[in-house]
Each structure stands twice: as structure tokens, then as C-alpha cells.
Length: 474
Ligand code: ADP
Ligand code: LRH
Image 1 (cartoon, helix red, strand yellow):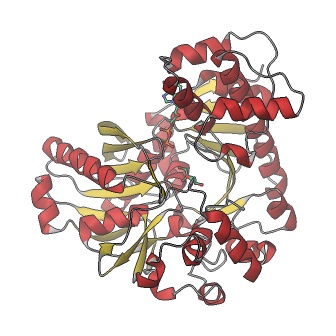
Image 2 (spheres, rainbow, N blue to C red):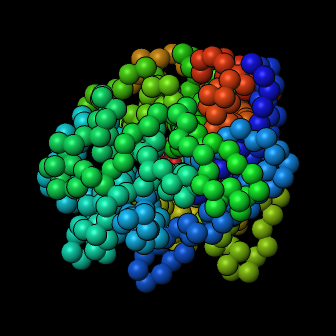
């Protein structure tokens, strides 16, 4: 193998980044060339992603990447799951809806009226989240909530596949992210055309499936000209969580992972799905991983609880410095309430401290007073939810867990890492922060021949380049 460079476009729900990776057999260096906030837009028509702005920012990042590394070998795109654009003859019909838009309730009802949830779970293996793509599409068919695009569309592209289409002109559906739609058969890994038929969703909408590590094609000439260089676009684990799990420096047989950013994705990596009644009742999901692995995990509400609280305080005129606020939360000595972080009332945008206070008040729990107390209560509640999900993942999969890895932006939160170690009673290994971009980069680098081997050897490259920080339970 030789050393070479690739670029990752990684769009999180909180921020997007473009990261350049130099990879060789025993080498992994990362350099952030762009970082931009991801701010959704609320209109009377609903809550949408500002996809044009995200694409523009990604292109600015790629321009910088080409300036620094004219011999860039390839580019890979990942983003949050489930959301999509509908297109007709290559033109986007409307801005992609944000998964926190509330129109999906009608889609859930319509779907379960035709295919009860237990049957859906047997077929797609997904935990119930009201925004799974299948429910969003069914909401688009509802006469009160639909916007009529579905009947006019000739294709649907998930967000990373949309960017790949804009970069290359190729229409594909990358498999790890397709596994979050609810329309993929969890056993065969193919589109469930029978399910589409039952739901009267047109199968022609869905592009051909592609595995991570597949070359898609070169940049369109006009895009290459704009960026000042050309490269291939490669399918990576385009679901950000799939890429993150690639870069967890773990021994998968004895570890649980928490991919902790906007969401906290807590689970284990398996060879085969777990589709038992117990897994369904615990609301555990079986998402598709890189190299055919299964990501058996539960969505915990995550640092959204914190970021949305900060947004409320800032809107009220306070100036918030996150490290200082976290330090103040760590110093709180009075007991704080632990609430159910997964309560559905916390899903939508809005005043988060008010909703947390209402939850505590309803149950006769102590209502936090200051921002520091709110934050302490949030972090304790997240740690509690993480510990419960780790225990449930172990029980349902029959694994004995010895170590818990935390990756993503939340791995920088020392209080969260320590409280998680305390509540789960196992060592927590924190980092890398940019696991998703690293996983994206390594899957490209493997295709290019800059690094070789299994996920296990990719993970040892990560462990060497980014030694995790250890928190022992106290
Ligand atoms: P996403 O990929 O979903 O956009 P990230 O993985 O980037 O999210 O994580 C974002 C979160 O990381 C923020 O909401 C914040 O809580 C946390 N975070 C970012 N920087 C720091 C820091 N310096 N210390 C502690 N937490 C941090
Ligand atoms: C994390 C994530 C998660 C999904 C959610 C919609 O960014 O991709 O895995 O459940 O966003």
C-alpha cells in the first residue's frame, strides 16, 4: 500500500464539516478544512433542512481540500439518516423535510393501519421512531399533510445520496442509510418491494442499492471546474452512525459503543439481526453496518437536550459558554432529578428547559433552578439512559460487555463520560471526536488501497492514531 489523501463530507444535525485524511498502512492524519453550522428553517409549510446552504458549504470545503491536496483520490459523503428529497427528471421538487417536523404522525397511523408495527419490525428490524422514512413518505400521501410531490416524483434520494447525485450525476441508494428507511428487508438487505406494494408506494422511486466501498463515479466536469480539481466519489457508510461505528477503536465482541452527538446511539455490533419480541419491546433497532455488520442499538435523545436548552437561554438574552456551563454543572452539589431522556415530548424544537421543568413538576421531582442545575439534570439523565441501553443491548444480544466506548462530539464532555462510567459500572473509553469522518475516510482509503483489511484492522489504526481517554467508574 501507498499513502494517499481522501476527503470526507460529514453532515451532522448540529454541524457539517469537510475533513481531509492522509492515510497509509500505519498512518492516519486528519485535517478539518471546513466546519459550518446546520441551521434548519421553519416555514408555514414545515421544518426543512437548508440543503442548498449545506451543499454550498461542502463545496467551499472541497475547494480548500483541492488547494491543499491537488492529488485528492476520492470524496465520500455521509449525513444523518432517514431524510430525503423527491426529484423529477433530476430536479428537486422541494426542500427535504427535517425529521423533527411534526407532519409524520399521520404517516405513522396510515402505515400501521396497513402493516401493524410488530410485522413491520419482523421485516425491517427498525425501532419505532416517528420519523422513519416510511412514515414520512406515507405522510406525503395523506391528503391533509401531503404536499403532492410524491405523485409527481420519479425518484427519492436520501440526503447523502442527493449530494452524491449533485456531485456525480449518479443516482444510487447507499445501503447503510437505506437500512434506516424502513423499506429495506433486514434479512436480505434488498428493498422490500412487497412492503412497498402493500403501502402503495411506487418502487420506481428507489434507486439501485450500493454497498459502502463502491466507486460511484468522477465529479461532473462542471463541478470539477468549480472546485479546481477532480476525484472519484466513493460510497461510504453514508449513514453517519454507520461510519462512526467503523471508527470506534473497540473489540466488538466485548464492547458497547455510544455514538454521541445530537443523538446518543447506544448498542453493539452484531453479525445477525435480533428480531425478538423483547428487542422490539425495548425499541432496539437493527441498522445495516459497513461490511454487512448489524448495528443493534437504541436511539437516546442525546445532546439535543443540551443544545436546545442553550438555544432557549441564548434566545432569552443570556451569553452561554459551553465549557464554563459544563464546569458549573460538574460543581452542582445539590441532588438533581433524573428524567426520562427519551420522553417523546423532547423530540421537537422549542423551549427545552420549560419541558424538562414540566416533566419534573408532573412527577413531583425537584425542578432545576439555574442553567447549571438544568445541565446537571440533563447529563445525569443521559448517563442513566446510556447505562440502561448498554445493559439492555447486552441482555438482548447475549453479549458480555467489558468496556463502553463513547465517540463523537459528546466524547469531549468529561462529566457525561464520568457519569456514564459510574452508572454503568464499567470503564468508558472516550474518543475519537470525529469518529464519523474517520470511518468515512477509512472506507475510502481501503478502496484506494492506502490501507487494507477488516474492520478490526481499521479499528487498530484508529486506536493508534487517536488513543482514547479512560474513565473508571467511581
Ligand atoms: P452531530 O454530528 O450530530 O452534528 P457532534 O458529534 O458534532 O454532533 O456533537 C455535537 C455536540 O458535541 C454538541 O451538541 C456539544 O454538546 C458537544 N460538544 C462540542 N464541543 C464540545 C466541548 N468542547 N466540550 C463538551 N462538549 C462539546
Ligand atoms: C445521528 C442519526 C441517527 C438517526 C438520526 C436521525 O446523526 O443519523 O443515527 O437515528 O440521526
